[in-house]
Length: 530
Figure 1 (cartoon, rainbow, N blue to C red):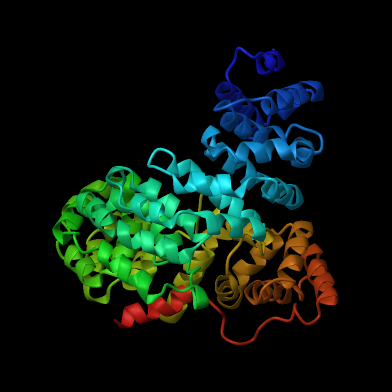
Figure 2: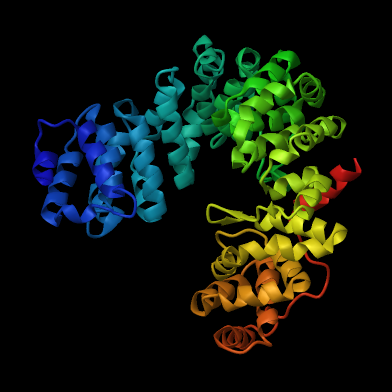
């Protein structure tokens, strides 16, 4: 029945794309790709490649899902149709977003085929469409150009760069429609960075009056529209993951643009928004505060001094008991400036009796409150929802070691199973810095650590630790500490450790210097002194 629906031309391509997408991703742990036989898959693929006009955008979206069903994957689906896809892309008005989507997915599956598609595309047609972008077409064209540039066919990109009408793009940056849909310009300007960063910054400077109005009207929602693409990709000043460092750090010009964006913001209005922000918007509010603190620190401080903490408390409500991640993020961004930290510390301290599971991140802000919480027999939340707090948890444990070492075992003991799973699955690709956490537990709670080692899955742990020993220094040091601690034991875990020592005699030698924690520990120490 499903194959019949997909083949039937009376059903539109938009519906076909939705059905294919749902079949591909299934529900929960189930995927439904097996429901389509190869003859049916081939028929649907052929139907998609026969699309005309505006149907091509939806057909492209469907094709990028269909190669999960097809034997040979993306290469088999697109390889024989390179010229067809190139022709589609050369007419971006038919569905630029869909074309950008399929090209972005294709380059991750088969770089060679993606390069052939771009090389066969008409660069002048792309440049002309891009130059004539308007608020209705800019979003899709931005996605397409970013995908084209990402394929990195240098000759093609040079031709597009040369043919673009820069004056038209400068005028686009001043369009009044972006007052309502700033995210569209944000994405479009970010796509210009791929071709000409100087032009992107010119457009950003022309966009500043609009950005000022957007942020003045609603700082949190306004920044939500600008954060990822404009403030991050174009200006590089919004960088919570510390990616833009060294040669990539923002220039004076980029900082000037960011500061100008904040000129019309009223600190009182910010305070009103923060005092009543809904929990679902806590992360967005935190991101805005992070940006404001970096770009206009005096306005940040003025806003913090006007926050109605009782109103914010009523918004958080029962979440004090077991604080959600977004609430932690908001409190952390309220804590950024030394001159206003006392306000946040008092806010937390006055409500400490409502905290049941103390978040490690809060230990960096109010360590004395956290220690008092533990001293009463309460818990430090080192793990939640299957996630182990390697970074903040390690720093929190280090604080406890320094101030109240007798409380470390109490903090760690309830999380033996979670830590054992974390060590078993410790992975250089998906797990962050953990040496500080692991070495505190090894050195200060040896009995608990032996319980953890006894619960490891030796086969899985051996594979993951071997990968870590081949990785960066942080992962090597963590893996080496685990291996060294297991060498003296008996049983399968000891055997695992000895095999790894034989394979990696140097890399598996445990460090004996001071444990390395996340960079946050250094910042936390400075904040406490401040």
